Image 1: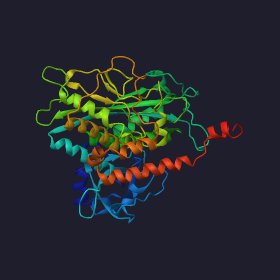
Image 2: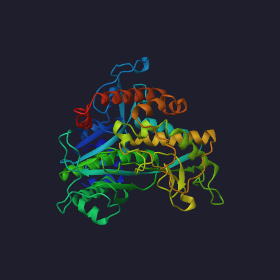
Image 3: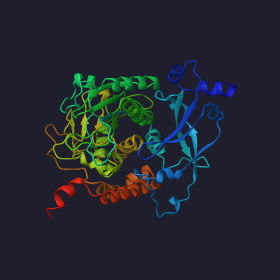
Image 4: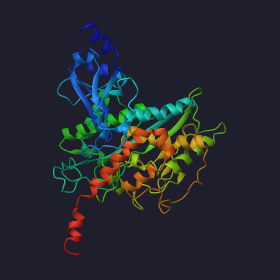
Length: 457
């Protein structure tokens, strides 16, 4: 290893250095997140990476739908030109790829143009933009996401329904086993590998639990800084998929993969601290909720419907939002109330926080965190007031969530306040992609239509 190799290796996070030990790094995966939170990038030998040469990716990775089609926008600033982005490694994000055959690490990269300006279409840069708004006020958001997902049988034929995985007892996983330790044990080696991969990556898991669906698991994270937590969720999606594939099953983050099972959410716990004092700005000196707590809540109530396509980005996402389902369709708030869209969990006064329960697990974590914090930020700067707290059952309250992707797109398009702080060019491209995906889905003839309409109409 030459001097530059050794110096660069010393800049890697301590957890990664501990995992590497005396082993030589063979390959580096230089990755970014696209809108579907799929890792995109380049792999290269460590010696080449350590030379720190400039790397490029075409900006067109942000022009693609989840199906791989390209969308063009009738706008001079977004014309189809295949410009290159410059990738800059954020070495603080470097983690192991413990499932790889060779000694491999992953590094998340920031994206700038040839002049060094941030690429405003990039999800990680959208989140950074929102965090700067908070920083300029002397505030620092603290978040804790929850990841729900299903472990299923391998599904290689899209025309066939998805089925829960088979547990170690030889039976398919059963539903309505929430919080069952026996159910978690049924996943056996998959959970073991998730823990092992997470430890190798330097990630701290708070808890793993069995959720209400058949084969549905939830992983909770320790609260922290939003960009770091978004990076973790981004990494964890791949980590969990690799652990599942190693054990002959699939891991899916679809919002609603099975018709008769509950959907999968990515609930976001949110609070704000004063940068100078470190105090939670949602809690007053008298240990009562502050005006800022109410302003943040009110912003969530007002703007989440317009931001819904960032929380529920696909046609399938809206299948979660059904009356009396596990996912809320209202935006009421209440203390320790899981039937409200905005829940205030039990905590000490210093830990007072707002849980956004609307977000689906199919979201891009950077964009979902950016959007949720943007909604709260607008409530803060506009000094809005929330509706009264709901103390009882809230599933019968007025529906606040749009019913379809296209309806959500139109609400987003009519929200200039959100578009301004998230970035006009990003919003233009994102809306174009979502319109394309919604229209593309309408061309598909479903099994329900063939079953009920073929001979009956």
